[in-house]
Length: 166
Image (cartoon, rainbow, N blue to C red; front, top):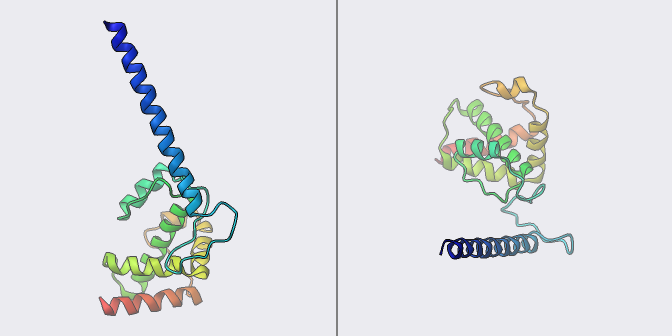
């Protein structure tokens, strides 16, 4: 009797693991088809950010930081995508603070500015480089000091426009 129960549990576990593996493989094939697998070049949606890095490499720390910043991270995000989003949020919040004096901007305004930055290739690259070049002291500072250059001016203009509209 107990041998039959153990045998049934082993079979059940094997079937469960097999079905899970099939589902994961199916999801992986779907992701590869959606994001192109090096074949033809897929046209970029002007309202989205291109994929970076290897999907599924987001870290637990990044997931926690994203949740702390009001994001719902997805396990298929790459480490690079998650870091770019975190850096962009830090940058846009600093611009908002410097432009308006407000530390807590409405989430809708932040989302609009985030989308603006991430969908503009030059701004996205600028913020990516900005994030990579920040020192540990700069990362630990409560408010980053930003260089007032062309990228800053463009983001500041959008901040002020969205701020007045909200």
